[in-house]
Every structure is written in C-alpha cells, then in structure tokens.
Image (tube, rainbow, N blue to C red; front, side, top):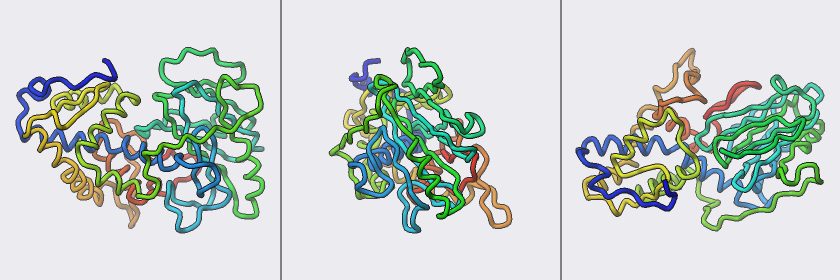
Length: 342
C-alpha cells in the first residue's frame, strides 16, 4: 500500500455497516489505538528537550540516567522503588541500526527492557540471560539486512522506535557511586560509527510536541478526527501484530486501512457520528472496568494475568495504558527480573 494513499471511498469503506456496529467498532478502535498513541506522546514529551535541562528527560539515542531514587513528587514515567536506579533511552532506528553497549557490572543485577510503541517487550538483555560482563547489542529496524559485527548480539526490533528501560540494583544512597559508574557505561552508538569514539546524539526538537500538558490530558481531550488520523499515521510506521488481523478487518469497515491516511471529514454523517462519540464512550468503559480488572487478594490487586503480553485483550491493554498515563508512571512496582507492564 502507498503510505500517501487515501482511504477508500466511504461507500466501500463501510458498506453494510449498521449504526450500532459502527459505534461498537469505533469504541473498540479507540481502545485498540490508545496504547500506541499514549506511548508516542510520552516519547515526544520525554525526548523533546536538550540534555540536562529537566530531570529524567533527554534526546533520543542516548541514555538518561537517574542518579538517585526519584523524588516523591516525580511522576513522569515510572513509580520509584527501593532497589534499583533507572537508565532510560529512546532509540530511533529510522536512519540506521544502533548498538547498545552495557558495561561490566561485577555480578550486579541489571535489566534492559526493550519495548516497541505497542508496548510489547521484544528483548530484555539482563544479568541472568546475558551475563554481567560487557555486552553489545545491535538493534535493527524491520527488514534491515546487515552484517552483525563479531561479539555483538543481534536484537531485531519490530519497528523504528524502541523504548529502553534499564534498571540497576542498588542497596541505597551509600551504593549510588558504584551504580553511577555502571550507568556511565550504558551507551548508544550508530552502527556506522561503531568502533569509533562515542559521539553524543544531537537533540531533535519537535516543535509540535506539547511539553507541559500531561499525556493523559492531551490524549483524552483529543478530538476524534485528530485521534484516528494520528493512529493512521502511526500505523504506517508501527505495523500491527499478525494476531491483530481481525481487528484490522473491522477497522476497514469504518474506513481505516494500514498505510493510508485517515480523514474523518470524508465519512458519511452516521459513521462520522459513531467515531466522534467513541472517545467518551471508550473512556467511560475503561474507567468502569478498571476496579474489577485484577484479582484482589488480601487487599492487594494481583494484576498478573496477561500483563505485558495482552494478545487480543485490547480492553485490558487500553486500561493498563490509561492507568499509566493517568499516573504518569508504570503500573505498579516490579521486582528485579519481573517483566514490565505493557
């Protein structure tokens, strides 16, 4: 399909779709797209800044490390915990593959979650799987043919944007100095520059990004036409999983196709009305389901079933990201070695 192509004529796009079916599809589509839109907004807000200007933020293709436990009021990405310090990077593979280097950790726990914008964890180099010696990981975009350098582990990414969430174990402030040395060893290098002195990645400021409004406010207040047009643009860069084909087929009934732009103004009134009503109805559904989403045991919400790998449980996936952007942090505390919430 041509990325610049337009949606099919509306008579074809929703032939035989009743108003009730169109409304149901629109709500499901809103929930389906919620994770990837929230991730992209977070990406822009966390990387749309020069290095060192704001706590926990910095340009893409370089690590931003937390020198201490985040302060109590910090709610930009994740909830603070009492056993690790974070080092975070957003990777842009659209120009070429990148090499992520990890230093010797002398037996200390570390973990690097690598997520795509659908929040699927596709790789997680760690002390247990990769050892605690120096490591080099070549992260490549889809369909990239490349010769992997000797001594480098290949990690194919499902799309061009990757979120790396690194954690290094610490026993507290008295141990910070040792962790800082490890954090300094996390590096991102372009493949074309591999083996040369590391150069810091330049900041690429996106003027369209709103750095101050919370991500949830931006997303939940976004008009339906803008929301679904944004989703269509992201689909061009971040292909849906093969298991999502039934949902993709349903999207075709309301005029959305992967690789094509979407304009709500081209739709007939009944279908346009269904899409315009979707944000309110979908948010109401997610808020209604949230209190009963997890098993409650002795007062604790045990939200473990399908967390991190949601399959086609789009409602739970959407609720998880809805809760994340509501709090501006990852859902719940995790112990070393536990997969991240998607």
